[in-house]
Length: 231
Length: 392
Ligand SMILES: Nc1ncnc2c1ncn2[C@@H]1O[C@H](COP(=O)(O)OP(=O)(O)OP(=O)(O)O)[C@@H](O)[C@H]1O
Ligand SMILES: [Mg+2]
Image (cartoon, rainbow over all chains, first blue to last red; front, top):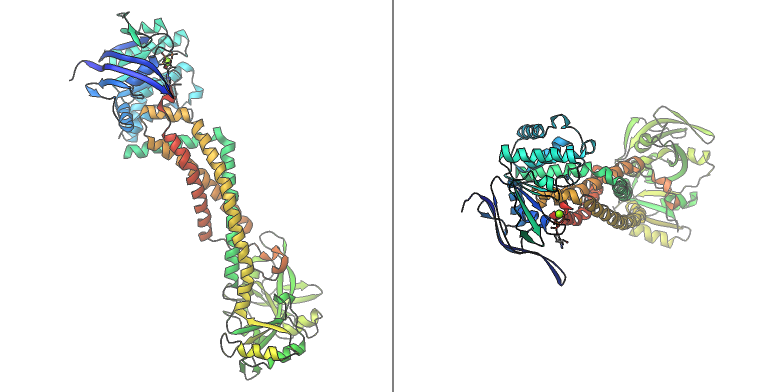
């Protein structure tokens, strides 16, 4: 079943069980996301945005239901297979960048490539290309602590794209940045979407950030509410 | 496989580079390991040094007579009359000059250690040429034997090596008298090498001992056979001596110290447990400190194995660093340390702590075990770290 769908979610349920209590975040959630989409997920705090992103990114698994990625089920993969799947298919961009503080920018960007069989010179080449793309070629040797928030997030974007995954997942990528810097980052994501064909799924609280996406999903109490906007 | 190595290596590098964040804890772990290893090595080196020094010193062919009730040579004393009675005992080998016996006396003199420039006690033994012939493995290394009746002495290789100013040709001032060092000797590394030897009569007169000695050594006509001598000693009321083979004497001396070696091992084991619990605490803290980084790497697709190994290797590296520091300190502090400084009833047994590659390997093994045990449980926790932590 190869389609133009990158993701197909069918009857997905997610419950967190703590002792006797069980919190249902989603119940019976259906969703399709097209290849090449730039999707923004919005909604009030606690509505399950991060939980959904984690399911899509294979860092969490649904309690029930099916999640297919490019026609392949990922909801029942073992932990190590999921790690491999993430390494091959997903680039993550975190709200707080999550750079390794003891590694310089280039070494941070190189991390996903350590999971491949590329030689060290091939890795260097890819790192240089990725840093070039985010406009930080001249900061390769800088430590994260020597970079501004926006620059750190650009390094994180370079790290997310360096191994050329199909999918970029961003959880409030601009949540910690000022307006101008946020716009810079969002333009960069838009470029990656338009010029490089990356499918991007981005959680955000910020309506002006959502404008960069070409599809916006509103999540409320574990359900999509019908307010889809086209860009 | 290649990827597993490269990601694990990267995790190890990151862990080691993040050590400054946990500087004091990590240093405490290194230090605790260093102390444990140093103490273990000190006792092992003492044990080893003592064993080497006494092994081969005692001969089964030689009977050693001490005054009745005296545990060691230094506490013993025998008058001329006793020596004469011993000479007539049965079971003693003889040659053209009569029974082969050696009456001996030793005194304590000061030497300056090369390593620490501190004073330590050395035995200056007065004996006759027959006594020298009784020493296993005796070999003149340099110069010549002392001339009986003169203030000449020969110096053991151990003394020459560890102490200042005993080179052949030197003149030594000991108390009021001057001595000329005319030769050096070895006895294959055993206890006698830590002595200075001079003529018995000269020692007796310089130290005003009249004709008294401390010990008599007698060559047995039959190796290990003391029955005849024992019977003779019992039936001779004039004679108040204990007799045993020289080998038995030194075995008894070394037994006293092997208790100390056991004591040392127990102390080290208890301290190792203390170091281990500290190290476990350090490593659990390390995992907690790196939680977000571990989770982020797992999100990127790094394997659980790399998180596990990275933590384990960090623990091993810290423990090994401690082990190395401990071994180096133990080597500098204890190797060649003269045990006469221990005092007590062992002053007379001059031996050196001996640090060897073999012992250092034992110390490092101990450090590795501490490192492994203190690493493996926190490493398991690191491997089980929830990936979702990366998103907090
Ligand atoms: N591991 C967990 N165990 C129990 N409950 C959880 C867990 N993770 C999330 N939840 C709960 O699930 C609900 C949705 O959480 P989620 O983080 O997905 O919300 P969100 O939409 O991302 O909110 P925010 O905008 O504040 O980031 C919340 O009520 C949260 O408390
Ligand atoms: Mg969230």
